Image 1 (cartoon, rainbow, N blue to C red):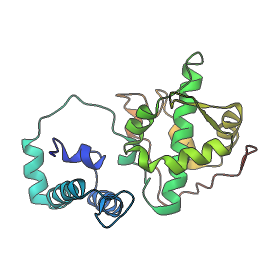
Image 2: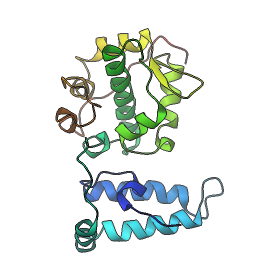
Image 3: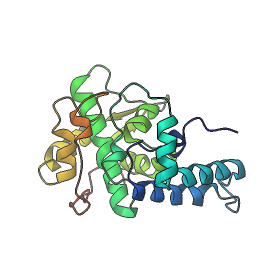
Amino acid sequence: MEVSNYYEFLQISPNAEPDTIHRVYRFLAARLHPDNPETGDADKFFLLKQAYDVLSNPASRAEYDSGSIKEAPQADPLSSSIDFMDNIEGELNRRLAVLALLYFRRRTSPSTPDVSLMEVEGRMGFPREYLEFTLWYLQKKGYITRADNSAFTLTAEGVDFVETQRANIPTLNKLLTSGAGPFATGGVEARKASTSPHAPIIVPAGNGAS
């Protein structure tokens, strides 16, 4: 097994800070370690260690970056500017980001408001394993629905939550202030959407099923 791009393997931005690289590594290491009976994978764990050794060292990372093939500019994933990894706060940020994505799609494309799981992964900037609990929670609350093809759509309850809580939740407001939408590919404002690590992001209980 080979890895063509260490950043893609770790599901992080090439501009990721060292702290982000370290936290993502710890998360994936716990999942992929051979001692994990459910998700352990010795080959992937070896590649994970290899990628981390390169990217966690400033000198080796600079050498790796200089030899990498430059790709066409794309909008940075939200994980490069918003903390999705830090325990409960990161989980709450994930919920808000998913709701913002689906709200933007419903407002701009009312005839096709669904968003595929692959697109959610791409715009958030990490694999679906990180999103399982987030999507389950939002479905149970009645804020989103999931079709047979795994595409997600914001419900009327989800719209109400976004519109009524936008002024109360700074992170949600920042995700929605971009005129081009926080998930529009190539949008300049998408790269500006960020959040203070201490911003209040409590997601109030909705009216959906619990």
